[in-house]
Length: 292
View 1: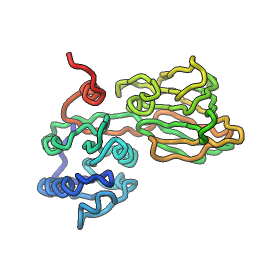
View 2: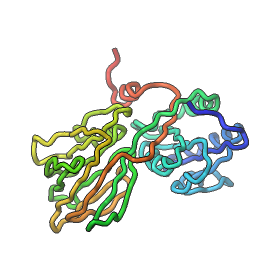
View 3: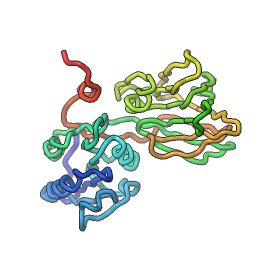
View 4: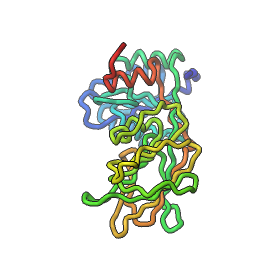
């Protein structure tokens, strides 16, 4: 449960998806509610046009602030960006859906203020989601590292060629995969890119990673579920071609022959605020599954 903090220490942040017309109406109303409840407020650059006079803080710097929570106005992409930024500080995130699907931004706009009241009255649950930590190793040197809530993907850099990766789990060779892409997904990410590639849906509480090939050359290459205590290594075999690493579909880098991507469970977790409903309620609502 979310515990109340002393009034003098309450602080919140607003993170927004740019270009949403609803923000011109939603942000001023949200700022008014937060002020009335004695929150100190900061906003990101995307929220700035609708929040005159409010302190601007880059998303990457919000983890350094003593925030009670972050309100995300947008879709899952906006929430993924905000979650990666504040996970290391353990700051809870409230996702308000201004998009069309939204597995993570579960709160519809008309439920924003009842949800905030639930937070204020300590009636809101905090759901923790695991993350995957990825390191890119090039010539025995770690050249970059990432935290992902959904997935880490190694995909082909050109249209005409398949991507080729050797996969190891805990140092043991699994297989050489030839596919458009190879996805290492968390349970949260099982309803993202992996799902569209034929991967299974995993409950968020499952302690596992999912390795899913996209359009695999071999029909026997199917999604593989491994414990999240495992270390997964992808070895890129591109020859003279280039591959590409993508993190949550938002950030990444080019990959070259011999590069290795080492994945393990992250030390950080994302905290999502929710008042009501279960994971299966979300699936029925978002995937239009039938009712009894």
